[in-house]
Length: 470
Ligand SMILES: Cc1ncc(COP(=O)(O)O)c(C=O)c1O
Image (tube, rainbow, N blue to C red; front, side, top):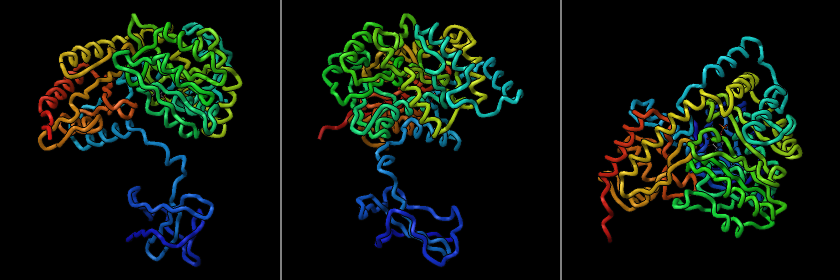
């Protein structure tokens, strides 16, 4: 059945206008024009509308397909887009090496998986309390006390479907239109978009590779105003792997303490993936910071549990209750099965015990290999990661160069496309993380895979010619 769509010239209000006396349209039989072919206009109430005529056989109707201003302001996640593109290529038989995803390549440790299986077998398959089971929240309180020196009670913990949800809910709970969210760059891709979803304004504070991508307290001090509502810190960091030393966090805390409106969201999801002698400090453990810090952590990274979707927020009850309210109208409690598995994960011992330390050892070996291999290239700059499983390399000296049959490498995005085309290695452009000079390599892959990837990347770099000056 042929479908066609035209942009209508007629005005209708911001709602669907079904043509009278026509039989109902078959669901799913109409497609809408792409983003590029959309004619937006304003209606009488100053709302953006886009009316299209949709024809499907003998049915015709007008539909306003405009999206909310909020969703239009948000960028889609580039890491997800590139991972999907690489997966599609791999499924089509192209031997792509995928180093774009932020996901451990290990299986969930068997003790944890068994706990999930037992939960199903034992019929533990019903809704849990919105905030998470008392069993899990109590276990989280013990973990935070023993490992982070943080005192929380179960009513100060909210378990969610992944740390991503915990962060978004926290941002929505505390930010109002006009508020500013302070985000050091390079940042995890979702932070600025989450600020925008809350109608707040992201304020990006750049850091330097020569300073290990750590925030300069002086810069922070100069950017704080009464509009500053939330600062988001991530240590160990995605995408740079940098770890904030305790002394630097103390300096930052002193500055934060001067601003009564300013809260801190401390994303500690990579806490256990850290390479000694680096150590992790929870921001809430610093003098005066507990009252204003929302600590986020989760099970995805350290316990290789990305698909179980489980994260949590710890903070003063007032803020946690607000997040709890959002969650109660949004997704309700997290999976009952995953929560049982998470209790088993926390039962593995200090910092995840041997199961986690074995994975961290493997990550460390891979980090060492990549740092050494890329260190052999004169034209790149790096800061050795102290945690997480990413290397953020400055390839900007290659910008402006050209490759036969590809064209000019303009920026991190075109260099990534070039690596995907020529080397069949999927990486993420740094501009997704707020730093266009760099590219992120995820080393959540075996050493053999990484060796092959480095070889291909180096070969592809050799094929680049310096740009001919005009
Ligand atoms: C820095 C950071 N925070 C939070 C998350 C979200 O983790 P999840 O929702 O899987 O728990 C991620 C995942 O990539 C991350 O890298």
